[in-house]
Picture 1: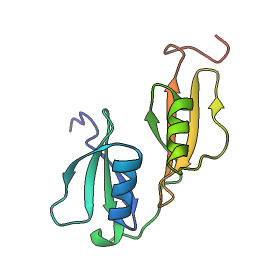
Picture 2: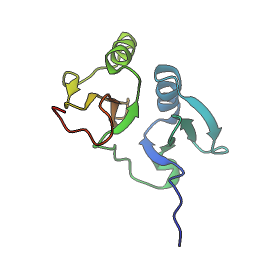
Picture 3: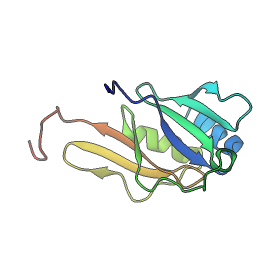
Picture 4: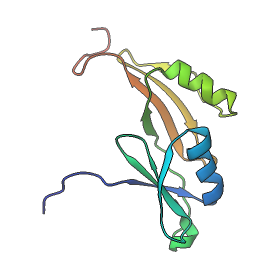
Length: 128
């Protein structure tokens, strides 16, 4: 076996139409593919596809992700302000780890998401 990449990460939802509006309209991600007549589709982030799928339609119990998917942005503060203007709530304040900025929020189903930007060069440690 030779695993050569990750095709997508599955993001569970209880309501595909509501989730699709969030990922497409609020986050501005491109819906590149619908899964036929199933309540699911693929949203492109530039480096990883988010496969948003309505759990019950696939015979699965809905459970939101509790650990965030880190979405890269050029400016966390600006992106946060834009999303807050669209009604997205962030908890807690934007964090500065010493090498990156992070701002935590959730989609309408409670899936954990994060705006992220690493401003220090790879290999740098906090305080470098």
